[in-house]
Image (cartoon, rainbow, N blue to C red; front, side):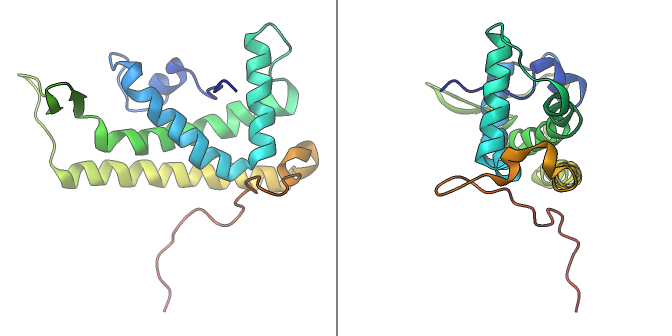
Amino acid sequence: MATALFITQEDLVRNSIISGSTDFDKIIQFVKIAQVIDIQNLLGTDLYNKISEDIISGAAGGAGLTGNYLTLVTEFIQPTLIWFAQMNYIPFSAYSITNKGILKGSSETAQNVDKDEVDYLVAKAREYANYYSTRLVDYLCFNNSLFPEFSSNTNNDISPDTSSTAFNGWVL
């Protein structure tokens, strides 16, 4: 089955810190990772597959996403996916693997950031991803009747993770 991306390159560039001049081929695998791991974990297999099939149907001239599913994707899934994709991409953004080995790119006018700064950016992206994840799960739980696939997972399907996605520290 083809992979239907839930966001476009334009969605990512317009709603993230990723520059429009960044080669999308370097980012796409991180979008796929975030979608398959993080988003599918929140939606469950059946709802994830329903949305994928609707997107593919729309690309093939079918009805595509409509109604509540379109709202779910544009208002809740896309912002979550954008931040999870950034969270996954940031640690790798400075590196390229070529036939010459692993290279770290730099520019004459730019400075490389240190590990603490990268860790900070990842932590902030994770914070935003967790915020949007919580909104997504709350919306799905509150509107469960609009999305029957959210609770129809069986056997080897991934069931939605409806636990709190945010870590608020230790309470002693």
